[in-house]
Length: 336
Image (cartoon, rainbow, N blue to C red):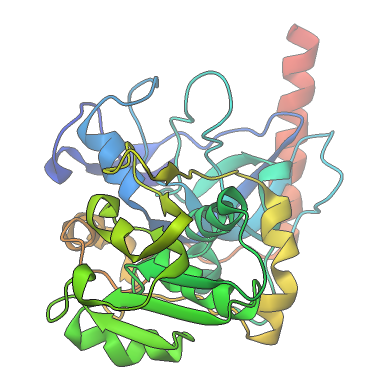
């Protein structure tokens, strides 16, 4: 057994329990990963509050993780035991039920095509903060058909997705002008991400911003108001569902390890940086406190969970666990 956070009914954060949960066995195309860090996303508490997708109880929340491969199925070809990986383990576009074992656990299983090798120059905590947010950020640029030299206005420039949109716009997509909104206390921070202009939403309304932009990228669901910043015929992207403005294009995300792998040069060069809220990383025991903070909507970057109360496994122990997994798989095949 392992330690994990789980819930057996939908509701507020208080339905979460910390307790024992079975350690899974990887299927043929899966990795067994010892989780070293995880990150929380709004989708995690939305799924906990309401039955938005089909799944079975008990449910361990969490999509983002970084950890060490300790076992693998016999059809896995890209990773070896001992590799450090990261990714979003929930494929939102896949048919069937969501995984009931999310990332707020000491061990998880994940398909090999959903993860990538962790860049060596970033920590497990930094890596865990990236997958859902960066996959969402990249998808928005693709949906909009954004081109080099265009201008962009990012609504929510200090958030988990917004902080990456600002960086990607400047460093990868080569926007000629990047503007973003944030609160007074975070103005200087958003400038450090690469924003050429920062609008303090506590002092300035959208209608008072004189410039118009080739893309309005709304990460907080205010497209019903922020659309006024778009040039005539320009795209308005809204990552919330449903968009508050029928003119806006909804952009979700494609869950893929390939997206993460393609961003490796930006991460290793330091052009793209993970943003972890200063309150963290929080201990695994403080998950309810972490959700309480995330649900205020005031987080800067991502809320990250670390300290999973389990020593990182040695390579020898990893191979022992992998051998046990392979024996289990062989037994399952013989029964089938």
